[in-house]
Length: 294
Length: 130
Image (cartoon, rainbow over the protein chains, first blue to last red):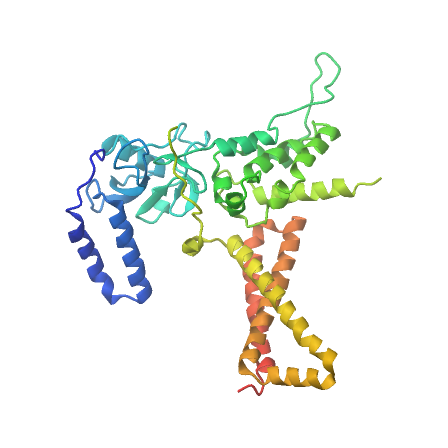
C-alpha cells in the first residue's frame, strides 16, 4: 500500500482546510495548530482508511533504511475501526493486516508477558498490548522507544539494553549449597515478599528509555539492570560474599549513583515495579557496606 | 542491519507538557541550585566591600536596597531558596526510602508551601520600595 511513494499534489488543499478554523483561537492554539499542520505536511502521506465516527486516527512513525523514498523518517496515518477492548497493539495489527503489510513492530504474547512491544504512545513509554485505546486521546501517536536507535518503523535496537542487563550477572549464583542429598534450599516467605515485585521484570526496556540520565550517559546501568541486581542481592539464598560482590558492581559512578530520582522509570513500568525504591535501597546498602568497619 | 536512525534526545523541553511531577522536581531543583550558586558569588562580592571600610559597606547596601529591581529579585531569591530547601528535604526522604509513593504529592506540597511563604514575605521585602 504505502510502498508507493505518495504524490505531493493532494497536500495544499488539505492544509488550507485545517488552518482556516484555527484563526479565531488564542495565539497558543494557533501556534499549536500550525505546528500540527507542519508535522502533517512532513508526513507526506494521506491518511489511509475512512474517517468517521466508528474509527480513530492512528499516527505511526515510519522509517525504512532499505527502501528508497522511505529513508526519511515520517508519520503515516491510518483510520482504524474502534472496537470494544481494543489495545494499541490490536490497532497496529489491524493497520498492518488491512492497510500496509510493511508496517513493522515487535510483538509476541499479546498479554504483557514477553515484553517485546514497548512503544512511545502519546508521549509515554507503554506496552502496546496493555494499553487500551479507550484510555487514550485520539489521534493516537505511536513512536519507537526514545533514546534507542531505530532499525525499522517501530523496531529499535535493544542491544545496548541487553548488554547492561547482562552486566549485572542476572542469574542466581550460590557458594554454599546444602550438603544433604535431597536437601532443599528454601527461601523464607518474608524474603520472597521482599523481592516479589523485582522478579516481575519482563525486559521490555520502557524504564531505560524513559530515563533521561540513561539517555545522556551510555555507561549508566539503567533502572532495569539495577532492579535485576536488587532481585539477587536481596535474595537470602545467596551468601554474604555474593551480596558484597553484587554491591561492588552497583556501588560505582555509573551504577546506582547515577540515579537522580526523577521517578520516570517507576511511572512508566508496565509491571508496576517500584524501580526508584529498589535503586534507593541498593544505594543505602552500598553505603552501609562501606561504613562497615567492625 | 544495514543502517539505523538515531532520533536524538526525544524528551527535550519541547515536550514539557508531558513531564511528570518527578521530572519537574528534578529540573527545578537543578535550576534553583545553579541560581543559589550564582547568588553566592554576588553575595561574597557585596560582603567584601566591608574590607574597604564600614562606610563603603553601608553605602553599597543602601545603594542596592534603593533599587526596585534588587527588591524584586530578593523575593525571587527567597522563592528559589525556600523551594530548594523544601525539595531537598523531600529528596532526603526519598533517599531514606520513606513515602516514595507520595513523591509527587510531596513535590506539589513543597511548591505550595514555597508560594505561601513567598507571598507572606512580600510585604516585608517590598516595604517602601514603591
